[in-house]
Amino acid sequence: MTMIMSKENEAIEAYTLVRTLQKKFVDKLNNLSQTIGENKNFEEVTWLRDEGIHGGGSRFEARDNILFNTASVNVSQVHYDEDDTKKLQSASAISTIIHPKNPQVPSIHIHISLTKLRDGGAYWRVMADLNPSIINEEDKNIFDKAIEDLASSTYEEGVKQGNKYFNIPALNRHRGVSHFYLENYKTANKEDDSTFALKFGEGVIDTYINIINNAFKTRKEFSVQDIKAQLDYHTLYLFQVLTLDRGTTSGLLIHSQNDVGIMGSLPTFVNKKLLDSWSSKVEKPQDELVKNLAEVLNAQGCVDVKTKEKLASIVREHYKKYPEALSMQASGNTIPSTVSNHDKK
Image (cartoon, rainbow, N blue to C red):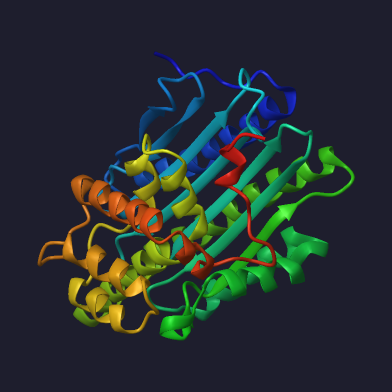
């Protein structure tokens, strides 16, 4: 069965926007593979929500093992066109994470989405954060400057919310070095909002490609210590995503039809022992969550497809068991109603 997309105009436009960003990013990443990698294009994987009746998604996964540890560029649209009892009309999103294999080359996370409600309201979520295993000040400065230029009048608010969202209180540090996050973003002009989302996404993609193209070409040597630093940082990344990231948890609680896609942001290996040690640093009942996450990893800390499915199930069952723990997850200035949007009005 094929994916049935929303027939609502604003949803159609949003889906076109995120697909445009997806194609731009994948084309540029493929070009890197062709010029400095092993010339293997990203491959498309699709998934369906309720056999396609309520939408679904398409993700492009990296196949170049020289350049990428793991990389996924995901686009989805979930909608309830035929079910007017739902609060949600549609949700259209691009969510992407690129983890380069070279520890001297930074990772990137980008999320841009439009949520359209049945009552006519709509809002954007706009996120971008640079995630190096080993900090390079030049990369950070280039990324910060690009975000400031692209964000314009929203810059201070986006940085403020981003720094709050990507803070990890238990470890007294942040995930990443440059953070931008606008939640529930909308102005009086929907067309301007859409243009902002598109231009922001395009600009971040171009900036990141320039950063890593230079890094791949000039930082070819790295040490065993660098590899260890990357493994530990990837462990931090998994820890933040699976214990604090509200978007990940919401996606897992809403349905179980795209678990591997939602887990697409996870690196291929983490430090199991380090992850397990952090269970003593979090409040209850999150200690139970961290221990359960570490337990399903093998001794090498491999995060393959089967492990991703197990990790997704652990997170889902944890918050069903301890719904009050959702209040302990990250947020900007407002907490999105992502899960409740899928309930009846």
